[in-house]
Length: 253
Length: 311
Image 1 (tube, chains in turn green, purple):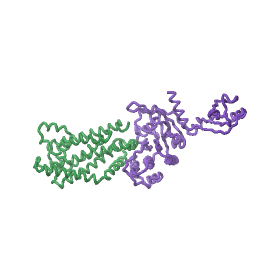
Image 2 (tube, rainbow over the protein chains, first blue to last red):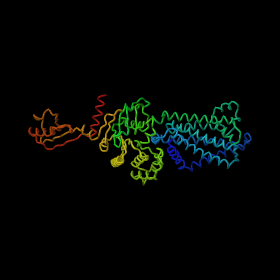
Image 3 (cartoon, rainbow over the protein chains, first blue to last red):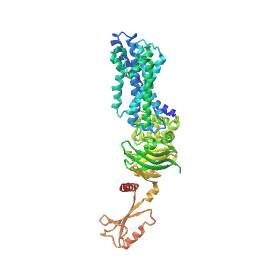
Image 4 (cartoon, each protein chain N blue to C red):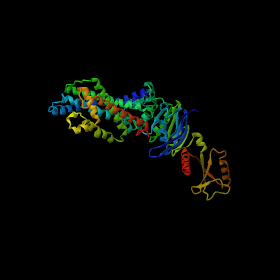
């Protein structure tokens, strides 16, 4: 393993993040506060409790997931797309690093950034609502797995994208709707039966449900299934990334 | 001399079916400067790409320092520094960070003394904390070289290092290359400036249409193919060549004022002394004499034309 190579990529990517640390910190704080003002105070005051949890607290896991997933995807996709766009990818291709090392560096950095944002949002949320985390270890595990798997998805997206429009298309048209419809702001049980069945095809449901279980001990789908789903998704992404490097798809003709 | 890079039967067919390399054989010796000369689209960049890992070869074998570039890519690539044709750099990054990054990427430990020495040699030390976007075009090219050299490669590939660069910077670049050679780095550069190849290369390879047409020592290539022209200006013009001067391929130019004689400078006898004697004998009065040697450009154009005719 070229550990120094991995470290170089990771560090380089993190430097970019630290250059804009203030924006990275302020924007999730503001957006989370807005969500709490709108959903928590304005709308939440009309919804008393969801399965025994105050609505304000109920939306916290969904809010964290929403930001973490978006950040992981956008950081990782931009991280690998940018060198492709400006041509500096030549250096990665001509360096003595293999696919695992490149992915570990890029995805590790993107996941770290997403994790940072997740922690900031949790901190901000705790200023608005009383938060108790019933299964802290499981919470951390879900958070780490989500950061990693969606950073992998972002990496694939960055390799696939041929321009900036494509780079933004998938997060906007696919990922955001999946998260909003994945039970970030409501419980699946609030939906009519037909929609409950349809919703189960949305992979994000398993993610948010599992994460919410770690907080409140309640979930829309069994927590084991959530874990299995996210592990399966991670494995699928790793498989695709491995195939990309093996065939050189869109990076090495 | 030991071979640093061995290319044998290398082929590259792109997805669209375009065959950019048609079985290239090339051996690059340790410590030499080899210039790969060819017109645009000849396959120069593709050849560098398959050696350095930017593209996968479709066939043949390529070894660098004895290591196969596909099977033992780590060992092979560790030996290579690559300066690409395009100035590809991250605009917001500081000079020193981008150079350190390159060293780390190649699995080498941070070495501030080495990086300082490198940046000083390339006149970049004063600019080390500047973001790359603040540098001039010439400085950016130096940064690319610094990045390529940061991991102390044994062989350096320079893909058109002086394309679109002004004369002064070109001379600077030649000096950098010469300095590297003195330090023992093997250098392969592609260029379509023939003057450049002639000035700095030990050997010249000519590539066209994905095939290597020849590889030869620069001096011997110039000598072997050196074709000279003698132009004799007469005091008063003549209508036809006087008797006694026919049969040597002489031509009359500029309304009979100039006699042109073409000869091979490497031949045992050039025939010049005889020609001059015969001209005096024929009563011609010589006003001026000029000789002209073929440049590498003429040789190159001749070779490419020959290949096209053969095809």
